[in-house]
Image 1 (cartoon, chains in turn brown, purple):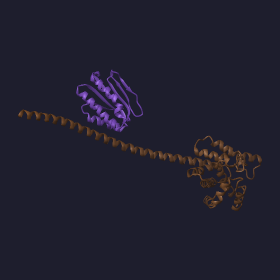
Image 2: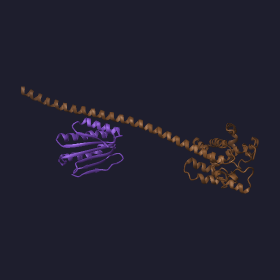
Image 3: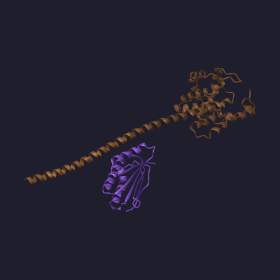
Length: 263
Length: 126
């Protein structure tokens, strides 16, 4: 009986030591898992912080690039204007007019905003027109007019090399802002909707502003004369739909003109 | 037995197991999709190497710049196996190679060194 009991105890003791080994191993494993987890959590946090930092940097850079692009484009437009008889605020007004025409025409906000930025470059080709022609006081003779008219093609040639969306848009604007709805414009003599909407919009914005501004060779037209001319040129020089938009929202155009007066 | 080389991928390290040189080398990143499956050939090779094919001295070089949690678990298992072999009297040297700028690689190395006191575990700055 005693021997039997001893045997049982021996077996239990053996079990006990196996159990101790197993639990020790389990404890060791759990500690390891905790360690791996803690290490992993710590690294995740570091990586997340690092990512956030990088994202912020990328965002700042993106903004920087966009701002730079806007500035370059605007400055190029201003250079174009400074070479000619236009004044500094002309490009700003044309930009604003173009944007609201674009919005009412049905373009989305992003595209309208891009057109606002691209339209100031419509006359960039003028930088390549000789001073003697460009700054001639008074009317151009026929050969001077021909030279002057090359500025649309010149603008196209300058900008067309770029693949940037904004500069591609500016290329269209520079190339087509002297086309007329009736096909009597230049340089291509495009007609109606063959003329890109960017060209049609900038054409109207540019002419409206030019007529209302005084130049060394001409007085500013009064509003009645401009409106009469616009009505006559509806479907001739200008896209009829854009003329309608212009008159339907006249207050907005006049408000822009007032806020960006030439000093 | 044959030597085994597994080329590096975007997610897995280069593994070089050389019997004649007594060399076990891992170099690169380790976050395989299925960690235990990926390392199975290496673990099998190591087991059979230490079952009589091993050199008098074996060198293990770990140069892991980035690894996930399951790789970490697998490395613990690997060093367990190495510890058993060392307990049987084999001579093994382990080099945990890290870049000075890679804090987490160093910290991980320190963890392993701390956990395997009996191993000849060296932290080697590149």
